[in-house]
Image 1 (tube, helix red, strand yellow):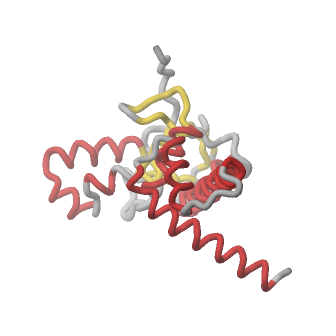
Image 2: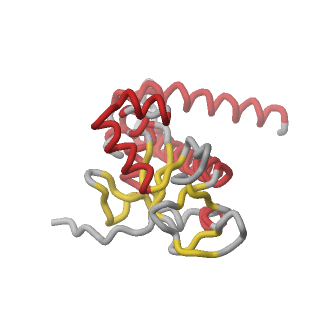
Length: 205
C-alpha cells in the first residue's frame, strides 16, 4: 500500500487541463489531497528562484490572483460550490469545472511577503501574479520538453513506419495516465510549437 506523507505547505495553481496527467506522473509526490498528489517543483531548474519571489494573501485581498489560490480560499470555494454554485460563480468567477484546473503545488516553509519580510508559508499564502505566471511558464516548458523527448523515443521505436502525429500524443497520454480525449488538442499544439521553432530557426540559422 502506498504511503501517504504529511501535507506540506501548498498553493493551488491553475494549469492547462491536458498537463494534469503528466504533472501527477512526473512530479507528483507522496503527499495527497483526496485523489491528487501534491506536485513537487522545487527541484526543477529556476523553480527555487520563482518560489522566492514576493507572495500574496488572497483571503484579505480586494482582487485575488485569478491563476492561483491559497489553501484557505480553495477550501472555501470548494465548500461554496456545494452550497450555492451560482453565488460562488458570481462572486469569484469560479465554477466546478474551473476549480478542477487548479493543482496543489508544494511550497517552501518560508515565503517573502510584499513588505520584504520572511515569514512561514501559511494556509492563507498564495502566489503573487508574477509568481504564478512564472511558474505556469516553467511547467509549460517542462511539459513540452517531456513531449519532445517522448516524440524522439516514439520515432526511434517506429523507425521506417508511417504513423499519424496523434498516435504519438495518444501514446504519451497512455504513459502518463492522461485521458486520451486530450490527445488531439495536444497534437495541434505540439505541431504549432514545432512550426514556430522551425520558423525561428529559419530566421536565425
